[in-house]
Length: 510
Image (cartoon, rainbow, N blue to C red; front, side, top):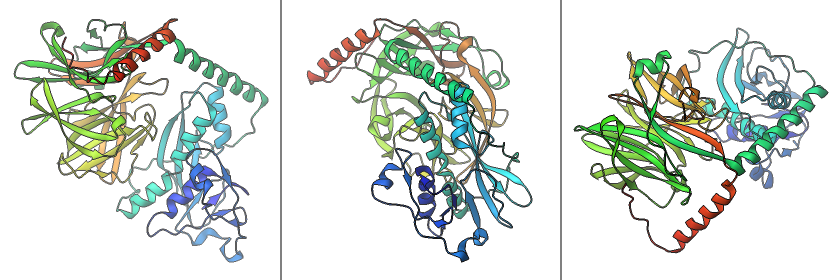
């Protein structure tokens, strides 16, 4: 490995340590003319939190100054350093090799996302091994940290997958030559400072006064309309009660009964529960009740049937588990059967069968909740579940986070994903799954859906599902509420009072 300068950034150190931890892999890392030894102690604890730096020690022996003895050279420095006869892996940030300057320019131009690629250079060609699209956040250090520590894991992920039997020789796109790094101009630095101030100011206003109302809608469209770009026009359920909202809709149709399962969020409680709504003619709500309330936040009630049994897998990252709930008296009584994937802070877990294998897709609260998609597979719904060799299989803030159940159309499988580049749940991305095995994953984006076409709820959409009569979606309406700080204080006091009473909330029936 070739590292940068006389001091090594913590993200490069994390890359060295990840590769060094692999069985059967020997890593020689050098910074300048020195052999690099990963530090321990306090630095090892800081690498996941801050851009700390460590100084390499030990002069590099003359016999080891030529890296051509390595199978692969991972070069994390800027600039092209030819290594005769060797395969070299290098990172490209928005097409260039200047990481710091690229981040500054991305914020200065108010970009929503930044593209990173790991490129393989050989004597014959340059090909892309892995790509990611990372959010440009409101704060420069967090943008830098999330992106750099994510891409630092890429070489180890790929080497481990190769050792497990994966091949990287197929479907590799060609890589363009890197853009030449240019010094930052004063105008770019001023634009960066101004953009950063705007972002931070907008964040303060949003946190203090912005209010979001989510609701559920229906549209007369099918799989073909979702894929081919047909405009979608939604009909919405009645406006939720002030201080509450409904989102993450899933519809189950059985025995002439249409059931809608949603996350029901209450600002007084400060968390969501899972509600069931029986739908009548014209999507009128006939009956409604809370069916799952664990005392911790729940959302995304992923509902499905298997071998005549009805199940729900709600998002329960607060409990660090993927829990399976079974209907004991469908649709109003459910009980927790088991945690099929324990000790996992999974968000929006989406479970389906593909090629005679069970799959679970999710993002993780601690690993970039909106831009890193993880996959797990098993021979049975009840496990044991194994992680995909390339986890995370997608790192893209415009499509990673699941947004509903996969659906089939014309012999292909499609996956709805959330577009969180501009804001959480600001849109949807429909991707065709081209390859899904324990050692490979490929998908192709076929459509992006913006919420602006949805009338009253035009500020966000993050769940889509197919029904026998069309599609079901959720939508967001954002407003500025000058009294929101006061309402939040009152809501917290009310919630604290409920908690102090020691009573368990009774199921709500409406």
